[in-house]
Image (cartoon, rainbow over all chains, first blue to last red; front, side, top):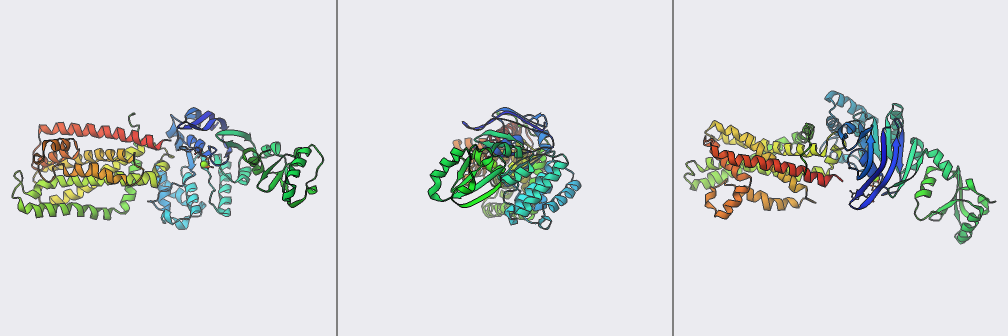
Length: 302
Length: 256
Ligand SMILES: Nc1ncnc2c1ncn2[C@@H]1O[C@H](COP(=O)(O)OP(=O)(O)OP(=O)(O)O)[C@@H](O)[C@H]1O
Ligand SMILES: [Mg+2]
């Protein structure tokens, strides 16, 4: 196992924000930690990269205890933190070279790696520029490049694609896939459920410091919300009637604003979506986002 | 309170700061040239014109060694307050560093070594000026350099202790008023401490600059004496204690 967490707990003062979670990540796997804001994802990641001590429980990375062997562990990690912390006193390429220096990578090798990473994140032209002149997405890309400078065995990515344009986002996911093929293990958080569904072998959905479900995203979706979904916006007047009708027919659903999300997979009674008077109706494949909303939505659960 | 668990990797933190410094070192030279030269001109030549001799030397010779330590002190204190605070709080450089094999201990020890190096750099410039003006008459003045390093480590760690409590840049003003200015003006750079009332002398003697000024003034006269051992031991112990304290307080602040 690359990561093994047992009863992992983190308290800030008296507030418990990670509540005794258990999970493991196997070699070569891509593991996604999903969850609403404040769920405890970043806190968990920070414990994995030895930046934050555990309150209780055990956590091993590469079968080493994070508290005692942090140097050995960190030497083999690549980290993309949620908050940008590029070095504003250095240029783009100097940021990579200095990071390589922290890892003790020889100068010529560092230069070679830095140049190819800049090419990968398409920042070659910005090489000599100051950090303050980069756009938000460019900073994000540079941080990703920085996290790869030591050719890590385990990559820890805290919302790596937040703020990236669609093309850059796709490039990042593609690069992740190719790193994975070469045996890199990846742990990531993201709020893009579609990406998580495509990239992750397994996901854990966290809320309020606990893991609610864990498993292969496609199987989780199929098992919990089924394969299809109706998005339906009824005429306002039919609201109360609709809730009643759906419960009668045993159709699982949740509401978000004016929209109903119906999952007819496990319906027990006779019904059709078309029978309901509606403004808008969309029939589509059920996704991880549906599962996510169903499990973590605060106002919408039935 | 734990003993700092720093490793040789602290050098990499030093190297980072040096890399940044190298970009504007010419500016730094100018700044640190200007300051002491003002002191030397205003006090040494201006005021010194009214003082025929001070403990057997010209007034300029009297203040010269102290100016080295005084200016080095200001450099170190600015670097480890403004500089370190910016890196820690504004730029999150420490946070980025500890995601690599570096530990917080390495980062703080690296900052202390860097602060001391800045002091040494400044001291070297002023030393050269004073040497050029022919104000030194003994080869023992070369011992000023290890003393400056000791001063640098001590003041860098004191400054980092203060920075570990800081929530914004305002705190540097308090630090200046309550520590830097008294340490500078009560150190006996400009006149012998015997002029002060006893209670003020008492304060002066626990401030780190006073023994440094006394010892360096003796060195510049070619004196090496046994009385220096006491103050030196005090400074070394003081520096060790403050380093341990700085590392611990910074860890308390940064590890969450
Ligand atoms: N240093 C800290 N001190 C006190 N509380 C903290 C600290 N860091 C995080 N928290 C709290 O811990 C909880 C979990 O925060 P965390 O950053 O892990 O959430 P997250 O799942 O990463 O959320 P997001 O999706 O917004 O990034 C939040 O309630 C947050 O307020
Ligand atoms: Mg987060």
